[in-house]
Amino acid sequence: DSGVTQTPKHLITATGQRVTLRCSPRSGDLSVYWYQQSLDQGLQFLIQYYNGEERAKGNILERFSAQQFPDLHSELNLSSLELGDSALYFCASSVGQGASNQPQHFGDGTRLSIL
Amino acid sequence: AQSVAQPEDQVNVAEGNPLTVKCTYSVSGNPYLFWYVQYPNRGLQFLLKYITGDNLVKGSYGFEAEFNKSQTSFHLKKPSALVSDSALYFCAVREGAGGTSYGKLTFGQGTILTVHP
Image (cartoon, rainbow over all chains, first blue to last red; front, side):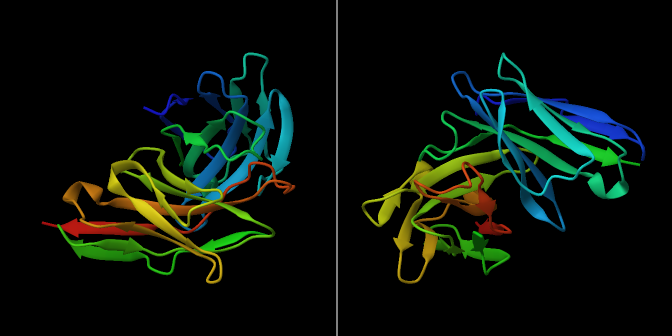
């Protein structure tokens, strides 16, 4: 058990809809990262937050947004969903801002299926 | 930009034999290198990391990895494979200290390791 909790485990919805994925980091970790895993794109970094502030941005679509709350949990919001958004979304956390040598610890992911 | 290549989509090995999963990388400056393993319907589990120092690093479950700066490689190894090692393995790279990409990890495409009884 990595200590990173993601909910829900599975999400099935339709095109055009909006969903929210939730992540609770390991106790003591201040950074949260979001990744998308799909068959065609592999594992792609989306965005990082550190102690409530955005720190780095990757290949995140404008339809997607994220935030980190004062209690350090994070939410990834996906809107105007398309079939191609079907993927496994992972959250990871680490102690520092990310430039340290500490590894990121991953949750079990949320599997999003768009029908 | 940083990148990782895992040249083999699949590696097959017999139980008890040594295994190697290959990884090459490209990054500005000194690299921080990681190996993760993913079992079906699970998240990625951290196996080991190279930050600096000894080129041979040891990790969880008997795995080790060899860092080679001149070849920009970080191959994962295990002296004696187990059937339970069968899983999807990812190599990842991050810029070292002083880099501007913060915690962004760039992953390879993954290698499926199958260990036959």
